[in-house]
Image 1: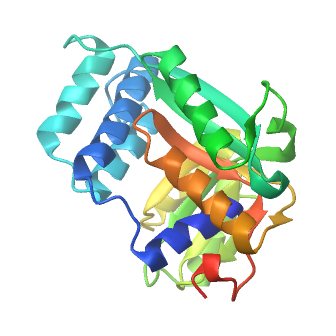
Image 2: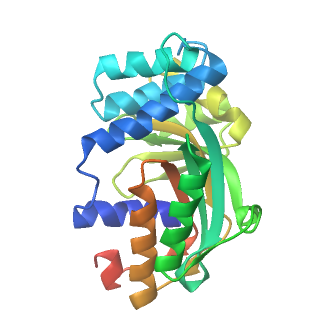
Length: 249
């Protein structure tokens, strides 16, 4: 399990998922705006937009908000222009961290991100300082009881998936080459297999074990970053052993 996935599960265990729905909607709206700007406002021909809209539905984001975000992306409605930025650094215990942002003010964002690293005992690095420790992949999550393993495996292989693994809750995680994500989604669609999310991700090549105080500091850093409006995704290569207090065990 990747560091980011493990941290996500820790947040679920501790009830720390962001209760501010407005913040969640803001992040998704930015994703929709950028997707519509890059590939047009039709989700049938813009797979990135389609995935962002699916995420909005999962979060129960109002349809009017989704429509307005698409219109901002296509230029039908005026609004702020967002730029994609990725920041790299080391957290406590030498944990490598990638921070993917959508921002309308780069100066503000980098200042905030740097302060989060500093206050938790880490440091923001230069571009390329940790990116080589991660591999870009497409990741598709299928919820439990959607389809049996044989059907999922057959469709995923047909689409060109690299790997299919069961998840802890009884679902499946499909990993693809970044360029094959769309093809695998189409294969799942053709087999009538629904998936809860499909997105580009960064998978750590190896993990760094952290425990005790360092583990708590890593979790603090993850929380600071994830709760910031400009931050879309956080990838990290940490591993917290089962039974460590920071892991909720």
